[in-house]
Image 1 (cartoon, rainbow, N blue to C red):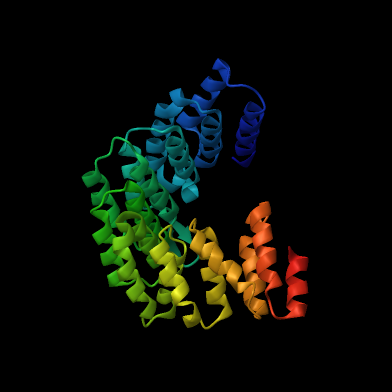
Image 2: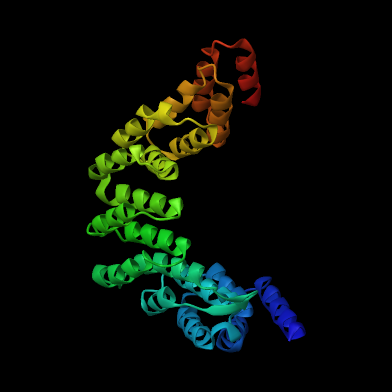
Length: 323
């Protein structure tokens, strides 16, 4: 079994070094129609890499075959994951595979019992469903609301992102409800807040601003980061106005990273302002988060001007050396 697996993987590696000829396509179709999940995954990756649109039905057929075979034919869902990813990349317009992926639960033996190996597949299928051009908003939302209550946190977070990607305005109250109900995993709350800002825009800012005084510190940090990363000046302004409420360096670094990802001039202006303050931890953290952008001459000059205003000569020298 192991030898055959190695041979098939080598076969696909050899195909990748060539061109998509008729013989190559026939070989890929054969692999998709009969091989185990790990081999199918490599074949699906190659189909997507080559942009073989005509192979989409073969990918969909392989998904259904592996789904029926369960863990016996596709342990850890490697094949099904790669097939959904390939179909999404190629723009497969039919939602059936994605809907099936959203419902897949695959229990596999682990030490002391069994464990579901399909959460990543459900999360990816949710995102693919939201991108599917032929699915109706109502059909997609009916599936995504189930996944917002999934036992696996990464599925709930993926479903929140999918609701936002769908762009359906009525998804905003659903994400707000998920936030109000709470979640043991802060990253789910963060995904919901990001999605809420995407769908409701400025109307979401007052609600998220209220969460900055939430009793749970992790909850507060997710709200702060969501505001800081926004493209809305009023959201970024709310985040920077509450900067002093961030008592620990870890939280400040997280919000700095969020600000660095915001496209608003206000966010970058605030970060450069921290370079002019005598606080080594904050100033060096700013250079770490904005570093990838300092290749731009104008931004580098702005950073140097801000550093020049720092009252601590030793810190100024250290920051200049880091540029």
